[in-house]
Length: 636
Image 1 (tube, rainbow, N blue to C red):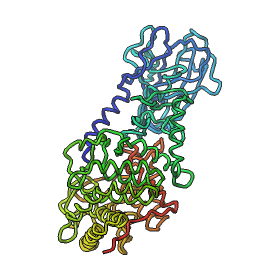
Image 2 (image 1 turned 60 degrees about the vertical axis):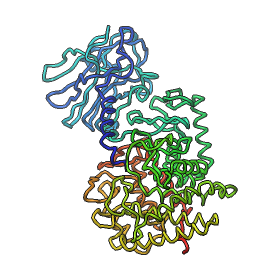
Image 3 (image 1 turned 30 degrees about the vertical axis):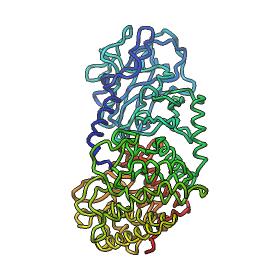
Image 4 (image 1 turned 120 degrees about the vertical axis):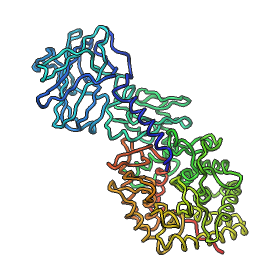
C-alpha cells in the first residue's frame, strides 16, 4: 500500500487532468483560410448548448470544405449532464432547421456521464452530399432535464480567414455573434480522429485513475493516460492498442514513445505474435470468459512490469515504479504457477542481488537495482516473502536443473531465515516493523509475523531438500517459537493487526491461511469476522480498521484478493470465487486491474497493479483445481 505517496501523486493527477481538459490547446494549430473546416484548439468554453427551459441555447459554426461528402463531424464538448440528447445538424441556412443536409441525435449517456473531450458524430452509413466551397453551418444543441451546462469549446479568437461562431440565446433574443470559434472537424481523418492526438470524450468516472494500461516493447514501458483508453481495446493477446479510429497504437522496438500506425502494421503484428507465443509457452488459468480474459491481461501486464534485470515494478507511475520485495515475490509465484519459469527465477535472482548484508531488504529499490529511492524504513516481511516465493518456484520448476539453481539462491535463504530466527523475542514474536501498509506499529503486527512464519517453513523445507539438516532444524525451532507466539498473543484476540489489540482487524490475517501457512482450527472463524469488519458498501475491503488510520470507503483490490486466495486454498471454492469475481468486475475499460476502487465502485490510483495481478492469477490457478501447495510445518 503506497500510503505515503498519495498526496504527491494526487497533485500530479490534478496537473495531468488540467493538461487534458478544456484549458489545454493541444493538437494541430488553428485553421487557416485554406482549411476552414479544421479547428482543433480548445482553450475556453465558448458556447453553452443546453436547449431546455427559458434560457434555451445552441451554437453554430460557419465553414466551407473541399469534401464532396459528409461522413462525420468531431466536436470538443464538456457536459455536466449525464443524461439528455445532443442534436447536430449541417445546415445551409443558419436559422432554418429545414435546410439541414445532415442531421444526427446522440444520447448523452452513451459517453458514460459527465465529462469532457472530443466526440465524433456520424451521419449514417452513407453520409450526405456536400458542395465543395459552399458555406455551411454546423449547428449543435443539447436538451437535458438536468440543471447542468453542456458547452462547446473552441478558441478565444477566430482562426485567420475563418468566420467566428454564433451563439443562440433565448434570453438575449436569438442568434448573437461570437468572438471566438468552436473546436470542430469535418470528416476527421488520421490524427484528427479522437484517441490519437486528442482524447476522446472522457467521463469523469475515469479521472480518479492515474493510468489505464501499458504499452511495451519488452524493454521500454509507456503508461496509458486514461483519456486515451476511452473507446480503445487491446488487440487480443498483446499490448498493442486498437483505437476508436481503427488504427493501432504501440511501442515499436527500440522506441521511447508510442506511435500510431495503420492496423496490420508489420512491426505491430510481430509484437502481437511475440506476446501470443509467450502466453502459449505457459498456461492462462481461468474458465473461458471474464476469468480467462482477466488472467491473460494480468500475465501481459506483469510481463510488461518486469525489467530485463529481474526488477518487478509495482506499477508504471511515479512513486510506484520501484521494486518491492513483497510485490515481486507474489509476481514470481504467479509466473511460476503459470509456466513462466524464466521470469519467476529472474525475479528471485534480482531479490538475491538486492538483499542487504545483514539478510534483510530495503522497503523498495530503484528498478536498476541501485538501491532505495529514499529513506523509507525497511520492512522485515520481505524475509518471509522471498523464501516463500522461492519455495513456490521450486515446486514448479523444471526438474532437470532446479536443484542447481536452488543452490545458487540458497545463501539468500540462509541469511534471511537466520535474521528472522534471531529477531524473535522471548514470546517468539518478531520486532515491531512497518507492515504492508508501510506504516510503523509499536508492537508486533500480523502483517510481519505471518509472512515470516511462511518464510521459516519454506526455508526449513528447502534446507531439507538440499540436505542441510542443521539449517532445517534451526529454522524448525524458530518456526515453532513463532507459531507459539502467534497462538499465544494474536489468536485470543482474533488475529488483529497488533498484539496490543489497539489497532483493529487486518486483512493480513489471511496470510495465516494456505498457500502461506497451514490453517489452524480457529482461523476460518477469524477470517470470516475480519472480512465482515473490513467490508465496505462498494463490495471491497479496506486493509484494516485501525482507528488511527482512516481508509474511508476506498477499497483495495489486493486486500480483497487475499481472501479470494485464502478461501479458495482452504477448500471454500465458491466463497473465494465470489470475492474473486468482485475484484474482476472492477477491471477498467481495457480489462486492467486497479490498485484501489472508490466509493462509487470505480477504478482509482494506478492501473494495473502488479500485486493484484499476481494474486488474481494465483487464485485462478487454485480455482481451476491445480491446488497450490503450502510449505509444510517443519519437523523438530
